[in-house]
Image (cartoon, rainbow, N blue to C red):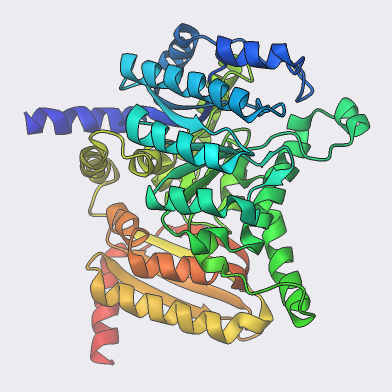
Length: 466
């Protein structure tokens, strides 16, 4: 039986379908939600009509696109209109309906529960019911609820509770508060402001050290990280000046950023992934479709294009399965996730030919003020990796003589699986998160050894000092 399973996995590896995709960014728009919005004339509150949704159409899209499991969340707007009890009742109906969908299609639908914010006490109560009774797979939070932005100290009791549950949180942008209605009429929120709104909420969370203080929480950032990859270097540059004037306290960037994951909804391209890899590691990137906000055939074509780009990109091809399903399976503890990861690794080893080494040069530019600190951390993680990981042959950092901020790291791994194991280790993750603010740019360049058979002799000479 195991032999048949391995053969099946190898065949699927060659066809690009070793495992069906996991979609962490999609929405279900239920009748009770529509009724709650219509009652308050809020169907166009976000500036555009809500699309139609039903379970059958969603499953048909998933089957056609090759998506095995979708994590459902409530879309914008937040159905709060000044009455906390009414909002709580709306959220309760939504969450219970999601639980029924999950029960009816346990292998296809999961859900993140919605909470009746800005009422924090009611939100905690609903989170307890959803996670403990309904079996919710996480929590969906709006970037702001009636102007109460994530990071607001008033939300600390909720974050403390979610921390105790080790909760996964999916963020979604909502209409900013306040909003310039003339701008919103000219440019739909989804085109620009949603990205700014997400970044605004994340920066507020960073400023208040939310995820450093509640380290058991994991947060999925939508839309390819929004503007965070662009904003983060500027934030890190500005914070010391503000701290010097007593306008801001300390920010533990490493601890905060290590809790962030990123979905690719609206950013399903190799270029977007490369931007994300400047601020995170490959195991924190997830696929998202944003169904049903675009036609199903458009979203399916986007997924096929992403798969093609990943397969053809020498740097990213080894991460394809991680991005499309493995990372999400691990994050949401999907059934047989660990077994799937293990068997996929077996298939991947067969597909890539375990006798072939992976050789890469990481081309890195360091901010000048962090050069010495970065080189020390890079040297330490290289030495630890070579010493403790049998599959790591070399991690050798070097600085250009003509520009010491231009760092090149020669990386040699026994095979693709040795590399995948390496980026999951605690020492690599500590290095990656600890140096994010030091790195100005990063490019991973895979190399083809011209004489791989000569490699052992080189290392023997190095060992013997000849």
